[in-house]
Image (spheres, rainbow over the protein chains, first blue to last red):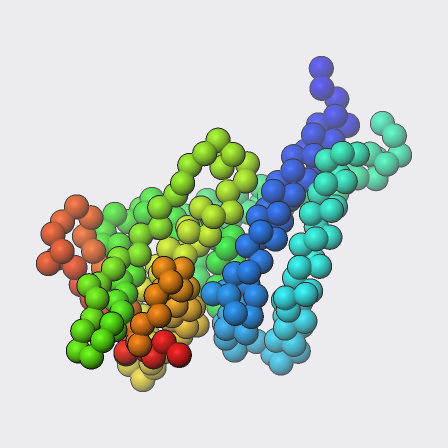
Length: 85
Length: 176
């Protein structure tokens, strides 16, 4: 019979696999979110016109090409390690 | 149960509780449209599922090229087609992107319907994204036209072309 600890481990591993798949897909599509891609952040940020200047600056930092790629790489590495652990 | 698992358990319980709270909220808000500027940033996570409850006219993107003086190509409809393979069950970036592109067209169509009389479609973020999508589609086909133009049409499924409604015609856009 599966124990609670096993169920938690299974839940964690499934979450990690899902995270890994999605981040790898985003990384493979990173050209789409580059400044010359269709989904360039400098175009999408127009949706934040209603937000405060601080929030806009925060998103500008988080969603620059380099920061987004670093975030995705960290997430994929975390997912990979969690699957193997 | 080791100490590491004991520490993680509350976090896992919290994650499960949050998940079911979202499911419950979704059930309570069933049938009501969730919209707001912040949701637009979640485009890639929330593709359009409208086809589940609305089989009416579907928004479609059309574009054409300015080939030479007074000469335009025929309108081409953008219809993303999924390519299936067993690997797609696990890794499916191209098809997810295609779904996202059609979601963008749906979004523009919705934005146009809600557009105030004093506003211009060119100011919409979805309009600018669709414009970039059209340019990418043209570049993918190695087209280098003098100019191009795109339209959003609402088409009735399984009906002749003359039953379409054009909701947006872009101005003639220079390629360079």
